[in-house]
Image (cartoon, rainbow, N blue to C red; front, side):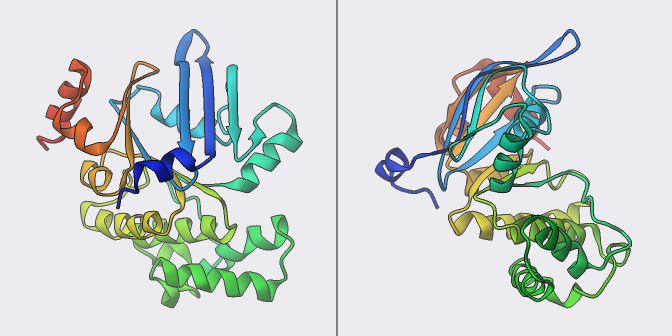
Amino acid sequence: MNRPENDMLQSSPAIEMIDVHKWFGNFHALKGVTLSVGAGERVVICGPSGSGKSTLIRSINGLEPHDAGRITVNGFTLTENQRDLFAVRREVGMVFQQFNLFPHLTVLENCVLAQTRSRGRTREEAESIAMEYLHRVRIPEQAGKYPARLSGGQQQRVAIARSLCMQPKVMLFDEPTSALDPEMISEVLDVMTDLASSGMTMVCVTHEMGFARRVADRIVFMDEGIIVEDDVPSRFFESPTSARARQFLSQILAH
């Protein structure tokens, strides 16, 4: 699934982070992170707990405001200005560990609500787009059900469809399978793999190394708030350069 190297060089950055810092009180969560993600590129971020990977991905759309440095998404620079924040969030879809579906709304209504309120679409337009993406995540037959009647894997696929309905240019995934039972993980990863093959720009925090090896153009390994390694999957998995990455892989691949 990897694309030719010159295609990557010619693509303009969809995400650019330059010397980004983030503190939580005295804790320095991101320590001068610099990262560029090309349009259509698929980047997996991995690392031990507390390494800063979720903080990094949440800073891309301003869910965690950064304290220093610069973040640009599709040409929009993220600042404290609400207009800039809104401009970036129009470009970015995000899927979390928890599904965050409205329990009192059906699957279809969950996928329609933001379209009519934020995109100004008519109900008819929004429902048509919602059904298109529910087909894409392979659960159109669940459109009339409430979230409580769905499995965890199905709810996460609804969350993915809901984000796609906004037709973002970038999709962010923050450990989207970590809250799922093992038998439900593959159905969500299959949907994400299909999405990756369509050319969507994706940044995914995950411990699913099989998915990372299969789908990612690059693996970014973090530890203690810095990027320790940034390489193609073949080199990262076969010959990581840092002792910390080797230790991490030996532990995570042993399970």
